[in-house]
Length: 265
Image 1 (cartoon, rainbow, N blue to C red):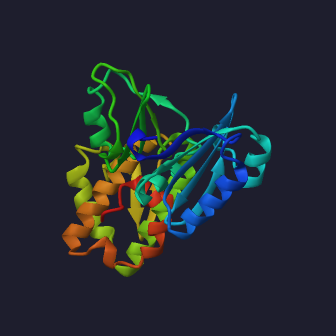
Image 2 (cartoon, rainbow, N blue to C red):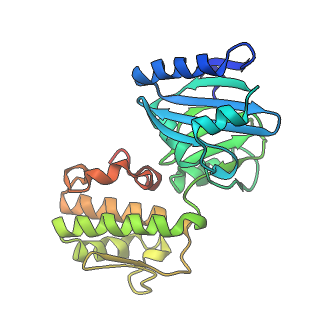
């Protein structure tokens, strides 16, 4: 967590009892607190995340869900920290809670161009440094030191492929029912195929017809996610449509929306 955003760090519940911790957090929640509470005792730990006063939940190793009662009982003599974050950073942290680490090739800053190009959404970790990314842009935190190796945590992985595809299928289906995408989609994908080969309309690795999206199993998440964002942007621009004006606003609350790189569109 960003050190400059800490409310308190490493306080023992021997001196700051769980009852007082709980009472303090209840007050902060009523004040629409956004941020992260961490507790640890030996190898055991728990993390709870709030956004605008709403508790998103708690978790421990591998993203396993955890209740507040279980944390206080399982960590009776814990050290605790509280960090205030913006709602967007809290949401991002929560969305990556079960993500697995993936090592980036090369040393920093060599991987930066690829992260920006693929519109990376997730956490970039290097030693004690953590930065928060969305749509290939840094939202906050500390970037790695020059020459350091890095790992990323993101829900845009093959393990989450089905959920990402389901989101895109619903999104494009809804848009198509409001404004026919087919002809314009074919035109823009011909132009974009050089940059995103999976969009080649003749190969049909990624195909949209009558609002129904299909993606070949051989096309990876790293390939189809930025390709779909680029194709949707170009299609809507040519049609003179704005995503914000289309009947998809409820989908903005889904973590896949931000992960797709659509949060500002």
